[in-house]
Length: 107
Image (cartoon, rainbow, N blue to C red):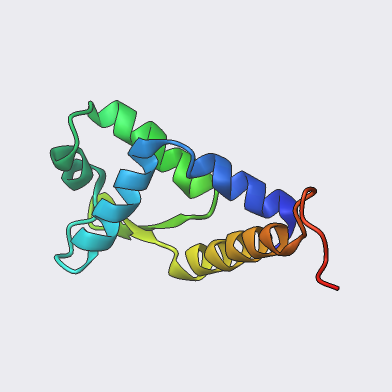
């Protein structure tokens, strides 16, 4: 994953409500309850606010939208989430593997 893709995904995940929405969608997917209305029932927010957060997640490619009758069903994009996890893990591993300035290499 390229740095700009990782940064864009991290910006989208940088709000607690959007993290909650991802968790709710993952949990409700098994119950086939993945519409904005179902998500709104789980959060103390107006539907318009939830819709705006869903829009950010859609634009970042973290969820996908599938028509379901007269509504839209939102599903996590697990492939994308896994790639972000791997990219973020690799970034942290690379940073922590470097020697700290006050440490010296073993002789």
